[in-house]
Amino acid sequence: MVAMHREESFVIIELGSYMTKAMQDVTDVNKLPTVSIRSRAGIIKHEEATEGIPAVSNDNQTPVELKDASTSIDSATRELVEVPQADESKTETGLTSDSEQDSNGPNYVFGSALEDADANTIDSTVEIMTNGFVNDWDVLSAFLRHIVTKELGIRISDNTSAFLFSIPVQWPKSDMENLAQIAFEDINAPTIMIMEQPLLAAYGNGGVTGIVIDMGHDTTTVTPVVDSAVQNSSIAQTAVSGAAVTTRLRELLQADTKTREQFDDASVPLAFAVALKESGLCAIQLPGSDAADSSERQSFEFGGKSYTVSKDVLARAPDILVQPTQASALVLTALVRQAVLGCDTDKRAALWENIHIVGGSTQFSGLRERLQFELENTVLPASNIFALSQTRDMRFHTLPEYFVGWRGHAHWAAFLGACLVAKVALADARHFVSRAEYNDSGPSIIHTKSF
Image (tube, rainbow, N blue to C red):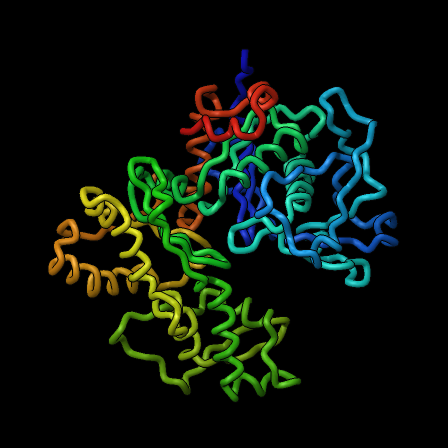
């Protein structure tokens, strides 16, 4: 008989290319995630690994055996990430204890410890995920162990928490199986669920059908969801996202003489562009609105010093999310239209009436208004001509107002959706995969359960 778990022990982990969020206890869904950590690892130099640097290793555990060649990494990265050797000193569950360290395998450091570490002690830093895909599963395993043990304070050796993993929609089945293997074998999870972020975002906004536009760090993904089912064959994606805005902003700042002259080497640092982008000063304008005069300046504090930047630059940089400057990149409205037209004709009207905008790069002021303007002036006229399911109305949805704790965090709708699903699904054996089922059937069992 499968043991049931209490809501205070439920764990949500949302994997992202730039940030990973987590929390334990979904009793009160008005609480925001307690962990928000950069999805990046530092590999400590071998001679420094035993000198008291806060690190997380693979703890003598047998590494995850990748199921598919597509999960391998390039040879340059593999040289930096040694495969740890198995050790015979196991607990009764077959896992190593929480305190054991692997003297042969690599030692990793994450989060604030990585930011504060002496650069001379770090051999290299690696991105755990790129464009939504895992670069190295051994590093991800260590990262998840860090989140579970250090950030959430859960002992792996006697882990009794049920887990819901929120993953990017692009993952193939083999990647889900690798994650299931890590969950059961490396963090000793008793039960797990794996769900795709666009579906959870729709749930968070109170819907089961709609177009989910997820603007992340590496990619912008447009995903149709119909009656709680992700339409994988109709997903549209572009590389124009948060990282592209940072690059564009830095280029514009560098091209502005007055801004450039404020730096000692006449070069705008990347950190300055990132901080400016995240300051809330950048905003997307509607076509025809009064454009900022290039001579108008905006003050900005960075590194204890005051700078001024062009207001015109602050408006032009995020505009590429809607109107890319690269000729080869599709405009956002074209991606949305492509995704909708890939779905059944009788479902298209419902998709247009339920548009969800999520992801960290949707926090720019004016984005929703600009996207609505562009859609109404491109898609609606086309639908009248070609009778594309007679689209007549478009509605944008956001988090329900009664989730007062989430006000101002609509871009985190997928995490709220995960909390709502966890309260129901992690308490029902029809939806989660148990350790006993995993032991009987292997990682592929993850594809037989859903919510």
